[in-house]
Image 1 (cartoon, one colour):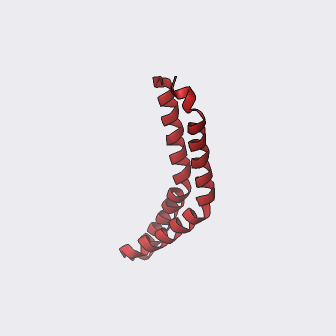
Image 2: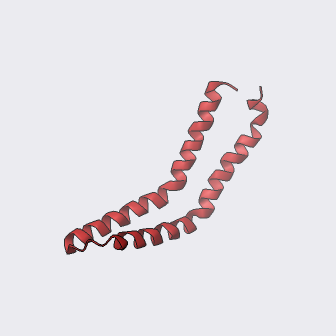
Image 3: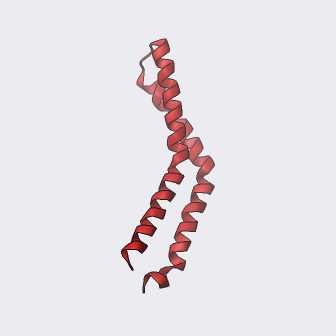
Length: 89
């Protein structure tokens, strides 16, 4: 196994991680920003107001995107398994 092969595998793994986490992180960020702006306008500085909606949105998005995330992780894993003979050379 060459350094190019290892680099390619790590590159693919990082892409899968970023793609898989992007919906949850992105929507959590947007909800957090919206609530922070709302808190700044109303001058209500309660910590639980930001935590609970973000938690709910992230859990709902994770549940909704789970089949897609599982599919891309499965595809990467199956590709690694298929290429084991090539990596052993």
